[in-house]
Image (tube, helix red, strand yellow):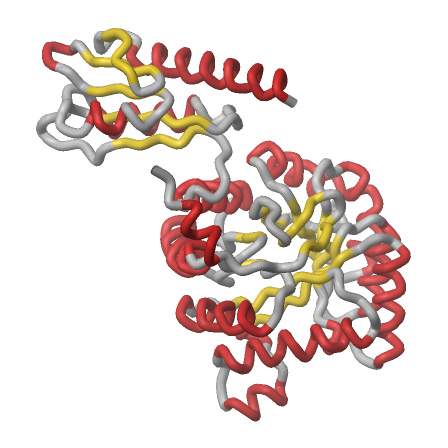
Length: 370
């Protein structure tokens, strides 16, 4: 039985904004996003990477706009993207205006960092005129000087205070279509800051553990930090920050949401770690299946268990199940019910065929009911 209803009871209720045509907050599905690492001034390379992220399931993609050459390429990039594009702006307000005019769906900008009140008004006007939302992005590594002097070091209170100061600037300009992040590379600092911010406001929250590290270590670190927040009902959109191919960020993000029963995309494989009881090479089988089933986006579940100790029980809870049996005879379960046996020969091919057929069946049902 899913524990999701218990989470929903205590989930933080946030207001909703739109990032292009993608809703964020207000009960909408938690979105998964990443960021390109190509030169934005090279639109062909950037669009190619966006395509890869789209194929992996990205809902939103962010691109950095550090110079005029980057914002000059934004119109082509936005036209070439099937998902909303967020323009990452740091200190130069003109880059924000240029990105908004070029078609960016959202501006990542801290209004307190771009200068005078008049500059803020110009950016807000550009956002309103072009249907842009914004993200206030507070980071422990670049905290406001006056807050570092006040608190002595980055701390949850300082991150929250910074976020609310920036939010107040937008509110004073009658702009409320924004989300907020308070990221840190320290898990405890980031989690405490997000918990404090969740209590202080109802704006949608963009979750992230910044500079989390490489693929394995960064995945673990991000899962601990963001997972604990998502489990507690905090968070409306996520970005897993990895020193790895950006596509991996999308994969990890969806795996995180699948593990928490918050959102499903593709095949969820339940598999055992294997032991001396395994009746077939479980680890190799799972590795091959993950690779060969990566193209399936339809949510469904598959259990791959090496023996009869836990196999039947896990198979009852999945769409398709495989349990290792004696003498190379393994049991296949469909919708939790024993269906037929299969030998070692072409085992993987058979499971792939079953999964693809099940995905096609579910797609047809969804199309019929839509």
